[in-house]
Length: 87
Image (cartoon, rainbow, N blue to C red; front, top):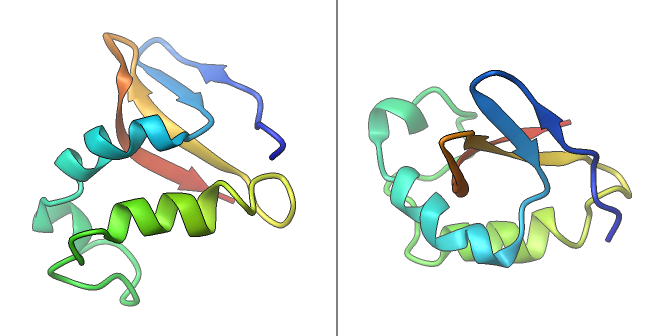
């Protein structure tokens, strides 16, 4: 896996997503008011292991090959993944 470069703003950190980030992302991915703005291909309710499958099967293996994905972290909580940016 090729890791994307890290980026920092006054409020956010953008860095590579790892398997260790799955529990915090699961905690933040259950808010329908956030999820409803995503692509219509995102299932609701989201499957029980959906985040784990997404991270381990779609993000990590493809990182740097045909996509770049950054985890979004608040600087005051740098170990708590709250979202992603996917290019």
